[in-house]
Length: 213
Image (cartoon, rainbow, N blue to C red):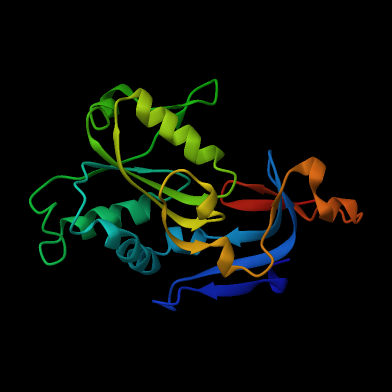
């Protein structure tokens, strides 16, 4: 399927691009018209640094950050964001501070939790939440619920991709949105027009990839 894909570049920095594959995809809660390959943005060190610079821009002069909480494999980008926020040449407000980069884990009930020695980095701290992509909002809501439980203060939310920013109650600083992808749609499985056309699923989207059906 990847040979049917195309690249979408960030207008401000064309070296930042995501691979988009059209098709008929499913997760455990919805169907999608496109698969977004964000792995290179998260794992390629030089690209991740550029991504971090873009995502750090809204916070450089206005936002105190104590901890960056990374979801969905964004910890490389998160580490570079912390570095960017601490640079004396770019960020006056966080100069001389310490910024920690942490990831929650899932317990046996699939709830997000922080291990005991990490909880002090959340409680009463200014938290920057970083996600790979926001589609239905389920991961975002789960992360916010977890951070509220541990007493974190949300200073900002960033994402590499945000499908429908105008439909969320929270302000999300994102690089790409659904408007950047022609025809991008998200469907409830029982109201999916692609299914109604009799078209079979191409793949199941999983963490950092997909499985062909």
